[in-house]
Length: 495
Image (cartoon, rainbow, N blue to C red; front, side, top):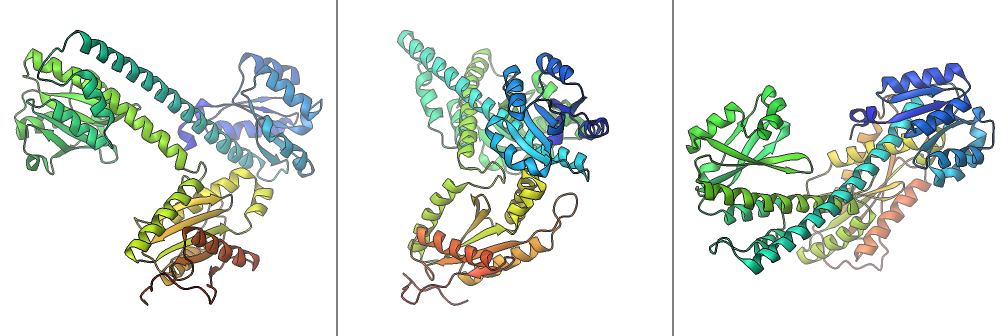
């Protein structure tokens, strides 16, 4: 995500007795899009905290007229949602580190050099964490609300079944609800909806916002061969007005004309499919349907769209359980599962499987001197490089605070070593962050079955190789050497 798209939503207070420092930091934060204010007087700060509490309070420890613990406790009594970023002398860092549980997001050295830029970095990082936290909380809230709605629909369906079935030829609502809930994917659920409106010609056009296009993917009442390659690209002006047009039951003229010409829909009507406020696509049908068919179509769509939103929310919640917050790679739990699965598959197919463990050199020194915000930004940038240089079937994970792993199916130790060295050189030659910072990485390589005999062994041997090369100074790769007693389960052909 780009925090600049959301920075205006965050209120930041800067509290310091240094007028030049406070005014300068406030200007930098305002230029970054934040709703920022500079406060010099402690009494004014207390009044503003009560009237309009900020998301973040950036304060200089030198401005405090009381102990740090008293100050933090007092602010949290006013509003315990306020988070802190402290500007302090290096000698106080050890003391401030003990306040992480009290809402401290970062600590910044009060050295004058580039202080404003370092504050903006820290605020960006803190607000990104806050935004994602709020977003995830909203996601769980939406999921809970949707489940409640699903329960209400199900209860209504049971009641309806007890009294009457409106149409004996159509499945009861409870049965259709369970059918939708059994769908394994969005595409599967769309096809189930089309199957439930048999007798009515209907097409689904998937929305591709990156190319401003609608592309036909599913159809009912028409041969599937007739929709292959059918789509419509919108003008930029059409895209800006699309939401309003769909809300009024209208389609962009270019899209409507294509539907009339290709499918003789006169006039074409659309049911927009949304999931979590995002347009997924359109169901297109003829506006000449009789009243009964149109009513059945819209009733079925209401049930379908509720189930569809529930499925999308469940998928998003599932992704939270397997994704690392900082790097957006898979996390340690997912790594353990996929490694075991891949070793089993490699054993069954008798194909090699390699793991490359990666650590950033001098990461903790970087964190101590530049802060957690810079550390996390570097880890995220490194993860992006790893992802961009990986094959489609490779899996990249963050497995520890300073450790990432690449799981490489059908890759021997020689191929993995070449991949590792190529990645090391790419990182060594890349400039990171806005100031062109250079970093280096260390890499440990192992392979099943030539160097170990299990998923646990593959992970441990790759870690040993990484630890060995880090202890030697880093910026190199190390290939694990199997003991002479090791006997591979099967032979890997020489490359």
